[in-house]
Amino acid sequence: MSVNQQRIAAFDEDLRKVFQVQSLKIEDESHLHAGHAGAASGGGHFRLEMTSPDFKGLNLVARHRAVYAALNRHIPKEIHALTIIALAPDEVAS
Image (cartoon, rainbow, N blue to C red; front, top):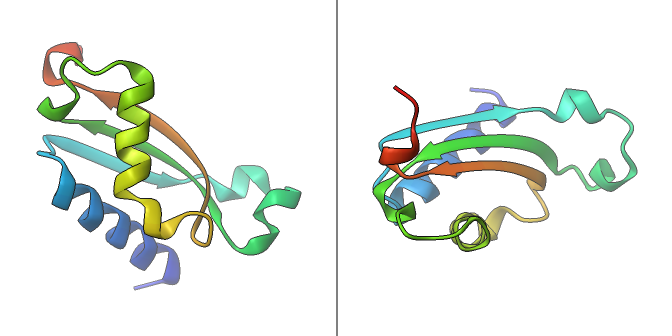
């Protein structure tokens, strides 16, 4: 398993400890930001799409705060930037 795969597996594990995850997709988008000064620390750029009933009734800011709190131990060393799409089950298009 590559270092990146290990990172993503750790993110997945930490999110599942906090949220009732119905679907979760984490992608490394670091290659899209090659040469970005902020990523020089070694932290990557990731995109996270998650569906959880825990997001129901929470506004966008509260959802993002909850995700950042769950991944706090990875920021900023492993995660430099994070795109978050956090949906409640009733918000997912069929």
